[in-house]
Length: 130
Figure 1 (cartoon, rainbow, N blue to C red):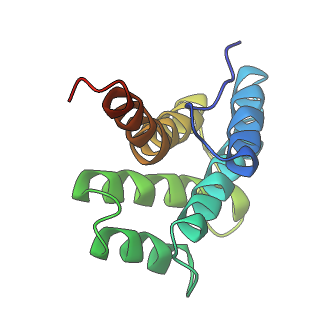
Figure 2: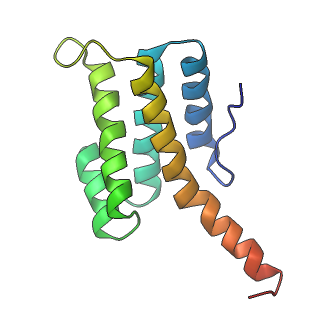
């Protein structure tokens, strides 16, 4: 399966992304969801969100306009799915392959927005066409 992280994604985040996709391919739903959440948290910290829990970090990224309101909602979904997987006894224990796929797809869009798009814009400008 294609497991590459979006271009420009830092190595530590890309490693979690690739492992999450591999877990998804092998239908290891819980692991895929937890790894997607882990990649999200590392992403938030790399964006300067270092205080509080993951919800606080997501809120920081939104308040600082690092992510859009739609991406904030997506980040919340990744967090919630990952939490459900990590705390199945207290939360949903019926996570599906679709839940894992959603978490990874949402994460991929977030990583594309934060890392790939700025790199693509910089390349474009570097060609002198803008």
